[in-house]
Amino acid sequence: MLLADKNAVIYGAGGAIGGAVARAFAREGARVFLAGRTRATLEAVAAEISAAGGTAATAQVDALDEQSVNECVAGIVKEAGRVDVSFNAIGLDEVQGTPLIEMSYDDFARPVTLATRTQFLTAKAVAPYMIEAGSGVIMMITATPARVPFPLVGGFGVSCAALEGFSRTLAAELGPQGVRVICLRSAGSVESIQEVLDKHAAAAGMTRDEFIASLTDMTLLKRLPSLADVGNVAALMASDYAGAMTGAVPNVSCGQVVD
Image (tube, rainbow, N blue to C red):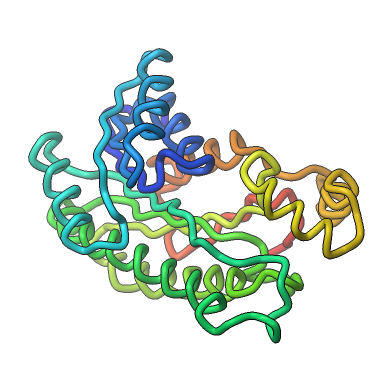
């Protein structure tokens, strides 16, 4: 197993992406701590993991609140001894489907503020413990609008680009202490972004299926990544097999973006 004997905290674990990553981590042997604001969705993911033979615990955490995050990490360390992997996949509450010049500043800036705040707080909380241990992996996730100029994505593309820049700076500072920083970039999984797809399809005068086909045609593999794909790559990047990788943005876009 890729993550045997590892302890991993996943923020936003009740969501589609966070849940997929949590399941993949647990399947690969990690003990997963599912963190998020909604207890019911966390418990549902934990039940699935337990039914599959994995080990999962839940914690109600506001990943935008520094004290809440600090207490969560301290609690995990007290219980498990260490945190080997921290993965943050909380949603950014962005507005899509509206032209920038018709959008309020608050709607534009909200995903940028949320993204940078939550990723900064969760990284800051766990880094000292990882530094003390001399190892650890801090992980984030962005999307192709960080690199590809898609219209009508509001502040989402800016927030993704900001996180990729943050991940590189953080990697430069933590690398000498043995801590790796990885930022996955996905093309978006159909299962997790249906409402967004509908907005863009309507703006383009297409059906959802037609719009998905247009996105698929942009990829080299002629398909979009599934949530399972994202979880699988996250598990590999969190494992010791990727031990020489840091400051990297693994491309999970099926070739929608070519680095």
